[in-house]
Amino acid sequence: MAAAHRLLACSGYRQIARKPRCSEATIRRHASRLGRHALLWLQSHRPPGPVTEPVVIDGFESFAFSQYHPLYLNLVVGADSHYSYAFTFTELRRKGRMTAEQRLRRTEIERTHGRPDPRGIEHGTRAALLLAVLEPQELTVRSDEHSDYPRALMRLPGHRIRHERTSSKQARTAGNPLAAVNWADLQLRHNGANHKRETIAYSKTFQSVVERCAWFLAWLNWTKPYSERHGGGTPAMRIGLSDRPIPIEETLASRLFPSRIELPEPWLSYYWGRLRTRRFAREKGHALRLAY
Image (cartoon, rainbow, N blue to C red; front, side, top):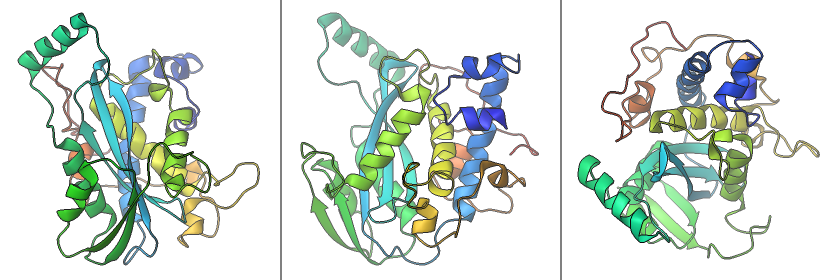
């Protein structure tokens, strides 16, 4: 239980392992189990029926293994409730300013391990919206001016979408139309040691990033008040799914099983550990029958 709390308090695996005097690998296994449990929890407690509020989409950028392997967590967040409806993972190509040596290194890595899908953000955004909005409906989607988002929205069959775009250069205040997803991004970086700037606690695998994100979103939706100083209710309370914050202990009170809760793709692949990090030739999946 201590690991469950400290994973949300910006602690690295080795820091968490010090007090119980266990190995970093033990904490890593607990984090993986918590992430799988969170995927099942989020699916089994998802809001019923159509989405009744505008949603905001955005991508949270980080990296795993090294800065040559950046990633993008596609988030779908309720504009009014701040409830995180869904997330998906996208692998990116390293971009931005690089020295000639760094560009050569990137070329060598891509020659050996392959290059990420250049349309990955489009595909990942579409998958996240399909997870969040189960049936075709009228929907307002807010985003920044990323060029992949309009293409992703056009590939949603049957949906009647109004797309509202806001410049990412606009001040990130409470009045910003993208405030809900900006808040989720802020909390994700603030509470996760693996996403801090210039950290040595960065995730080593993409699978670990996804599992920690699932656990974080379960806590953010159901346990954490919108403002810890002024209250305001959890996102689940604000959307009408709960009348009180749900403690972590209650979230983990009973085991959840994929044989009883049907997970959609790509969450099913995340649950079974099928997300691969290119630099690892052999990466174990998940086959434990009685794990969270």
